[in-house]
Image 1 (cartoon, rainbow, N blue to C red):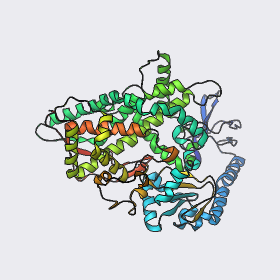
Image 2: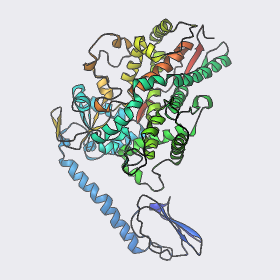
Image 3: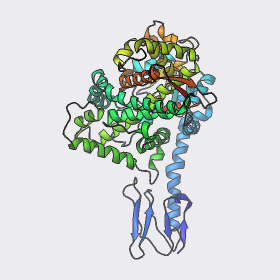
Image 4: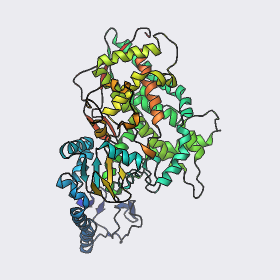
Length: 548
């Protein structure tokens, strides 16, 4: 039996040539349909395109080939030509930027695939000025006053063109991906109590337990190294710790990544992060055959976790975020917050909560080890608040109120390496003007956080690492500093992240000395969040006196 392979569907469509299939028309274009030939016991997968598929003596019928060609021309070529003509007369053609960017999204798409969209944007601003075209219908703005107007004063909605593709279920967005302001407001009110300061502070004990596991691992590494400093992959440790913290606070249990070195859930989520970044600019990826709407492992893990929580008696002392989500959910008809929404929100919490916070902590440590003079001063501050040998538990409310240098170091790291390097994309809901240029309704605008954070008009020596800039009293509202975005879309987990940063960094600095290992990869990539390009970052670690 000969097996035919068709190049346009080689991954999904393989027909034995000795039998004929009846014509099949797909009702649901989002699924792959299988047809079984009963007498031969052969299963044929039909790819999700809504046109007839027939087999004529081992060959595709001429009518089908013709239909395929016509369909491709009608659905791909003609819309592309229309889009190209529309772009040539768009008002955005008058805005600075390369001609190719005004006609095609290909340059931005390639930069996104490589994880270099933040460098791509930065280079365009350096060449063309404070407003540039990134792609047809997409701009980036670097002017601090205009950014403030977009994200705070006028509070533009999030971009549907971008966030519409950042959803597991297109019809049911998460808090992060809502673009409708009223719907977003309802979801935020539902979740805001979970992220109130009081509830966040009650999570300190479980956060500290996770930090203590990381401390124990470093202690073992130092003991094994003997008189020499231990050399530890701090990228893996910090990211593992962040996953464990968000696991215990979201799901009520640590995932044990620090102790065991891995867990399937964060591994699958990292893959999902990369795919999500691609889908923001390449929504056609979602239509690829055999690509599930939800990762089966993540879907099963979150569904079983939610079901398990519902089945057990409610613990009145439970403070984790999952309990709040479960309490607020209902699968009744017309409910705006169902079990699937609990699953999706918990995935966002685990992904965004662990990635962005871990990166901020790691960048803080990287910069401190690059500048040992600042690190020595920070150790002195840590010792002043938590004297060596003190049994006092690390307390965020205590240290956050007075450890000014630590907060300055965190802020400086987030200024130089903001998680949302290109900013959270907004959309013009009506015709607008930015820096004198007409911006049509529906245009996506990236308020470039990294450019505002490096604006020489607002910051002295903007590219230099200088935590002391944060110790000089200034009007904070005038500073172009938006690591957590701003306006109504300010990150709901801001206080959670700051608490985790303080507990983690203070806990580690109380017990260990850190030293830079030169010659490592320190470039960054941007995939949903800015992060180090390498898969590891090593530091020399030694126990501090008084804690041995």
